[in-house]
Length: 209
Image (cartoon, rainbow, N blue to C red; front, side, top):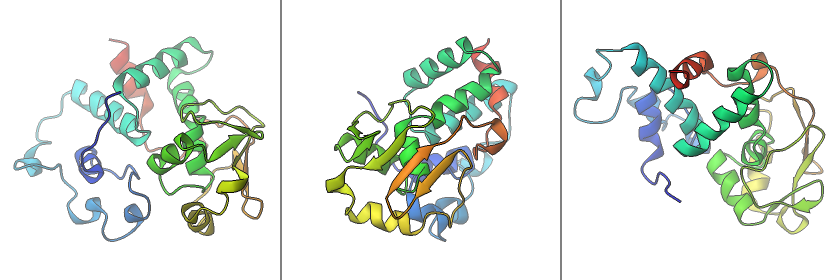
């Protein structure tokens, strides 16, 4: 399957905001946004001179897609699923993305980024309700318990990241026991508590054309 293999910092600069793709680097002075907050390329500084409605909508979609590191087809499928659900499509989309296992592993403090979380899951380091799951897109349900497998709890990346849990903010719909190295998906989040700086209504408008 095709995937982006270029510099992640360029994606943040292209979208003009931190997408938190590089873990600790995103919180340090080495972050590309802190140094060069303009699009990459020779004409990066003047790239935002003209902004049509379509362009604004497209950039918002790309921002969210890149934040959760999804391919276009995957993202579109999530949108279609959200559109079929009851309620507000934009809110439903964010709830589905938040429920992905790789995002849960990241939110629970077991990995410094979603990319690292994805890699750990693919290498069979995590389980849900005691059963091994190696699918990053696995949809975690309310009440599910997520934790590293017993043989993986001592991994340096997991231990180091858990030590920093809470220092960069937490979400109320997830409970984490740092001592047991276990997290629980408590409840379906409402839009106001999902820490994603996105105007999802623009994405809905884009796909509704």
